[in-house]
Length: 279
Image 1 (cartoon, rainbow, N blue to C red):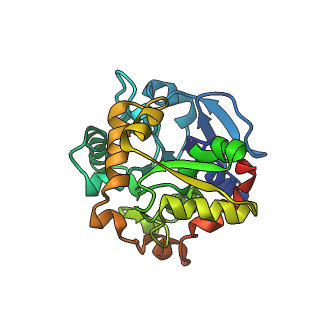
Image 2: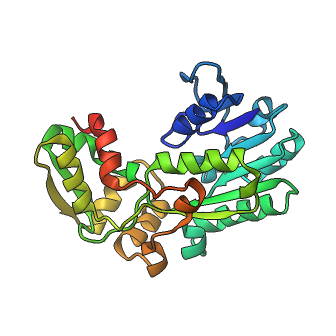
Image 3: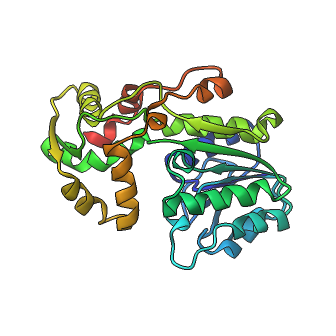
């Protein structure tokens, strides 16, 4: 049995589908009841409360661990999730971490994720750590303004990073869950090229077959918008990366190619597959 947390999101959904199509028994975990592929069992759990994961872990052999807001919830103790995995008899954990653990290790967000990585390494479990950079799916932040105004409003219009398609993260995660060769691997996951917000807007326009204007926000304007859905500290962390990426955050990693035997998909491919969100 393989447990997939975050199973209804941009990574968890295709990962669950891939594992189910491979004939593996899967438990899909999310906070709320959700539709899952045929043959997959759903369990509701809140990862900010590690004990809520116990029913899903009973009898499981592998776990895909994805934390988003759960990492930052007041009073949360993400490292306890590893203890729950050990107690539940899990043998292998694939952890979705972040590239920032390596490139910007001293921010509070990365310190918490590094602690989780270290706990996993010391747990006695088989483990693989995935460290993606920026996600192509972050462009969904612009979906409403594109639908209603055909406008993308974003900061740092001509500064880019090699964003990765979440479906590629899911494909790498599936390989790591199913293949012992990836045990002990730490994979940095990026797209195939640096792409700026302005270029992303152009790719979405091409997918739509309709012009999309680009409006450049100031950093303060962008932070005000972002803090409506995330802590101010996390917004500042994100804007630091977007506005002034380190050379290591601009590097195109070979790791997707190494794991999957094919290059990562470009942003334009993601835009074409997800164009319905922008219509």
